Length: 599
Image 1: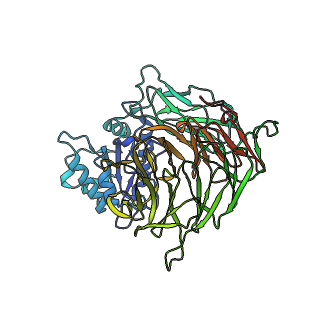
Image 2: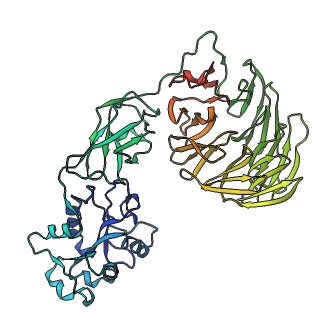
Image 3: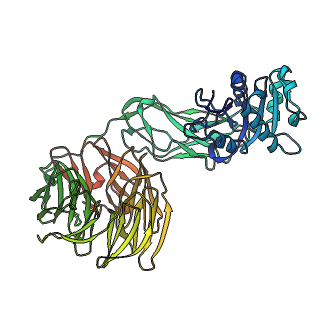
């Protein structure tokens, strides 16, 4: 096992199955228990040592963390500087076991590892533990480490000597895992009720370590278990709150594992297919003869339905009253006080009112420009729409038919924008936020290259970036920037009370103006929020496969193969069956009525 410029093998295997082999930092950020240094020709002996020590436990009763690079081709992870990789791992290791052989002392990097381990060895010794696997190598031991006694493998109980030297003990009775809750009634895409796993600690066995974790998996693996699958142990319990299955199965089991513990398995249960939509033929239930994606107007009664490129307004009486065509795929949506707006990739913007009036506007492209992609839409308090393009132009549009007005030119291009009283705040493609008043640029703030959304919330302006959340106090000009509470954000839905964000893995949260997380949830990779109500307790997520999910209090409780949405007040849901759109209370979409819901 070699890398360019490196002719030794440093083995590394962490005890946590969720940690990739070869990682420089052990699970939980703690130290490695054992670092094995050896030449590639001695891999078999090193692997035998690793396997023997892995069957032991630490003083705390957990599985030992043994540094073992199991890759047979690269030696270190791709893209990692191998010397830095080792320089970080050696100081994090409690013990270094060096496998002395004739070839070991011929390897420059083995020599480097040995000298680094010697420098880390305290005066009383015990950190560097030489293991003589070849008697002929004794004559080649360098003078600097010759005074450190080695353990020869010719002794009958040498493995016990190594085990004691590195502070491990033989594994006796181990903590036995057990499921604290029964699992059943699973439905594809629905979040399971919280699943708890506890540990039954035999008498005389040390308690779980403070940084212990439990990992869940499913048998068979084809069921597609999703969610947070490795969680920490808190007060002897690991709690899994966002589990779901991607596929139906007649018989599935959950398996819980943890380092140094006996695993546990649930009784078999079925994962059912998504339920059929609610009854469509109740005589007094509103139903629109329309296909496509429904979007409620701010009044929570009128609907706009986008079918392909056609946007049709259905009034509060659910009658089709006006329509207009997009020129390309929809890119952006925005809500005002009364109006809705949608812009496509070509620069066409549709403005719509709840009474049925719809206006289509093609934003002029910059002279010589081939594309006119809109970067952001934002309404002011008077329902005037501002549309900013990647090319840098910001336009002002109204529903009354007047020509679009060019408001300003932001040379770096527009990613996000919002209206703050008499000013416009523009987030450019350069990652900077600029305030414009009467078309003149004022204060600027450095944000980040990728900005996804911006909106006013309780007197603050929030800008959501891929990596951070930026909160601007317009009155004092103070900017607060915090890291995202999840991974790199890929989708966002700003609101007046809460903003929902989702990362590429499907993890999401809703946070308020104080940047406090109110609701957390987990969906499928690529999910994006399209509607929210009741302070984030109700969410609608669109999935990459075209299905939609209702998330109630962080749990997916209903999945539809067709589009659906929520009114802003959370009193109505619009659900399509592919032919019609039914208006129902969200409580009828599985999970029971939420507090405050009414038809």
